[in-house]
Length: 230
Image (tube, rainbow, N blue to C red):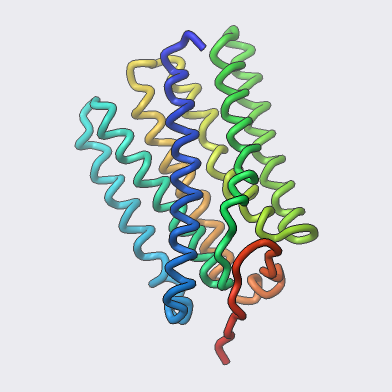
């Protein structure tokens, strides 16, 4: 990986980890303070929105400095993790550390994409971008199937990590044409990932019956019996 844009890869991988750890920490907070699950879902998601707004404020203040763009990117990764943690908290689930293995497919997709897209002709790059975007959708679709049919917690991790990956190909493609602005484009992918994840989380939380229908009885996770509002 001789292209300077390849520096986006470790940042993406770290962002994926930040999102996962944030989700776990938030689910732990819900496990300690069960009353949080009784709040309206909009209130539960407010910290996530605050983090995104902070990322939005940091972005123009970066003024070409990588540190500012990376700060914005990781704020969005944390915001995405918080939103996911709210879903887990609403289901009274504390995922086990082993669940990080479910993030590996999204990490592999990011690695393979950067390796292939960064060492190819312009036409092949377009093909690679389209191909990996479709693979990202396949990962999400697989996650939905696993979530509903096999192992809900693993499926949940696959879906949200797939959503986190999805904006990367487009952001990396822009960085290929303007490598000096690669961190700015990386920060944009953070906003894209947050929007996708937040939309899915809102859909789940605003439809309370969906949580029951998906049966969040995750094997391997620490769970408390969920109390339903009457």
